[in-house]
Image 1 (cartoon, rainbow, N blue to C red):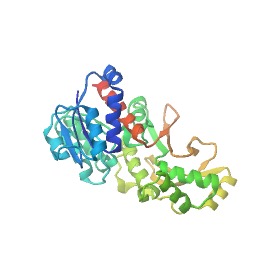
Image 2: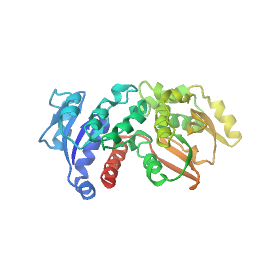
Image 3: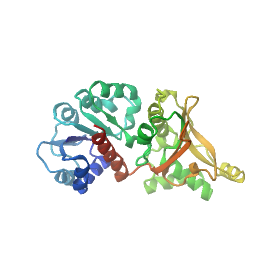
Length: 322
C-alpha cells in the first residue's frame, strides 16, 4: 500500500510517528505499506525516503525539504491512500486535495472537518471512482462514533444523536459548574493552558460543534449543510445560571443535536446524573435507535495521538473491508 500524507503539522506528524513506532503491528494487520509522499504548506518530500528522517527534518528545520506544492503532490504522485490532515477551511479549498485523490481512484482518510462543505458530493465522488472516504477523526477525535453509526448500527434506524462535540466548551462549562467563576476568567486561563485557541470564537460560539453536527447528520442520513444548523454558543452563560440549574438537579452543557426534527447546537439543561453531564475536555454522544435503544459513547475529542489513532483505525478499516 502506497500512502501520501497531505498536511504535516501536529496531526500529520502524529500519524507519521505512529506509523514508525507501530510499523510491525500495523503491517501484521494491513500488510506492507510505504509513505511515498508528504506535503504541507512548508514544502514536500517524495520518492525513496525514510519516514523517520522526514519527521526529524520537519522538526529541526520547521519545513519539508522540497518546494514542490501539496497540489502538485496530490495530482502527480502515485498513491493508493491519501491521509489528508490539513487545517479546516469551510470552503471548497478545504477539500481540494481530497477531490483530487478521489478522482484518481485513491481512497481518502481525513480529520479535516471541511468535508461538511460538500459531504454528499464527496461521497458520490468516492463511489463513482471505486474509492472510499473515511472520516472517523473529524468528529470526537478518538471517540468511535462514525464507525459505530456506519457499521454496528448500520441496520438500525437512527432516530437522533445528541452530544458534546467541543472539548474547549465542555472544559469551560465544567469549571463554571464546579467553581462558579465567570466565563471570561475561565476562558483566559484556558488560553494560557492551551485548552482554548488564541482566537476561540469558533469553539465558544458553537461553530466547531455545528460543523461536526453537519457531518453526523449526513452520516445518519440527514442531508444537512452548515447553514441548516441553529447555533447558540456559551459566551452568555453565567455562574448564576449554574447555581439555579444545580438547585433543580441539572447542569449546563453545549449540546449538539441531530434528528429529523432538529439540527441545533445550544446550551442545554442536562440532568446531573446523565451520561452527558460529562466533565472536562471529553466528548460524548447519545445515539437513539429503534431496535438497540440508547447507546452512549465517549472519548477524548482532540490531541495529537488521539486524532492520529482515529486515522489509523480508518486505515485498518479500509483494508479490512476491501
